[in-house]
Image (cartoon, rainbow, N blue to C red):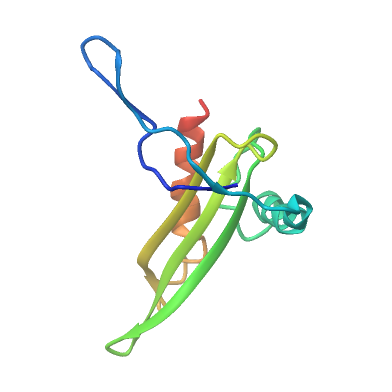
Amino acid sequence: YRLRPRLVLEAKDISTGRVVYENPVEILDTIDNPEILDRPLEGMRRCSAFGNCNGFTTPGISSAGKTGTAQLHSQGVAMKNHNFIAFAPFEEPEVAIACIHPDAFTDDVTDGLVNQCALLSKRIVENYLK
């Protein structure tokens, strides 16, 4: 499915707990041949289980993710922007994340190999699925 993006599912009155606003899922369109997603989804699962998404991996939670790094140069310094998309659990997703971290590290940092968005996303998933 391709869904209309939304930031809020619902809002509740803090004193009564009554739902005062709902933002339902809106399906924009679907894929005619869902099997075409099998290979990229398996790649995302493997990235999370054994690959470059290792900062995102949480024992006991199956997940899928994909890292990315966009380089830019500013005033002679090479900067790296971390990008990361993920979802969990893999089998029946409950949470999806897209993260962009501008200027995550420069070329002169030796410990900047872990995607900072993957680490942040791991904390979000762990807290959400508690």
